Length: 243
Image 1: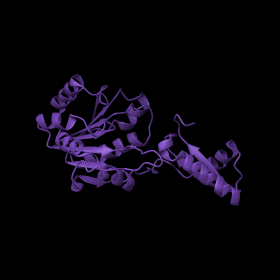
Image 2: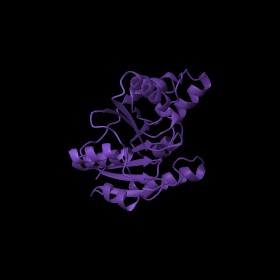
Image 3: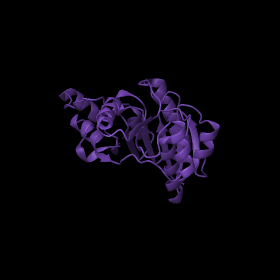
């Protein structure tokens, strides 16, 4: 069976957006006769492993995936030799690495990079210097496509002019609601727990709580809206250094 090697530069500690994506990807690959090797910085926790463990899934640990250096590249080469993937897909490992060339030299047919990065508020993308553009095109010559998870991310990364435009694609992030059952009692319990009156509308942001996620803008929006309409409750869900 053909194999996809999915490298994620994260630790799978809980069932979140990345883990949900990985499972859905594995499921769809299985329907098409493919296997998926999920490679993380550490072993998935027991709950996460059960969630991800489909019949066509294999696990690998690549603890140095977000590092650089000869040893890191050697570790990837070893994993590629073990699984002989047709495709390498990189997530959270950086845009400029030697991984695409390592894959090419190991006869991997296609390499994809997904750019998950968040840019800070007020970020203004500019075209990279000539020598940087040339170096980036050399480093990423084996890359088939770079996937951007938003139109804004696509605008930012293409502004650098590091690769031809036709090698970028937008595939929007999604939220899987299939695992969330509508339950009026849970709604009542949530409002009671956080002292939110029944008649009050709720505006929620679910994200990593860091400045790049527009937290300051969210709070300013809340201030302005509540000043005009006190029957709106703003709720932030997540964790992060900005709490």
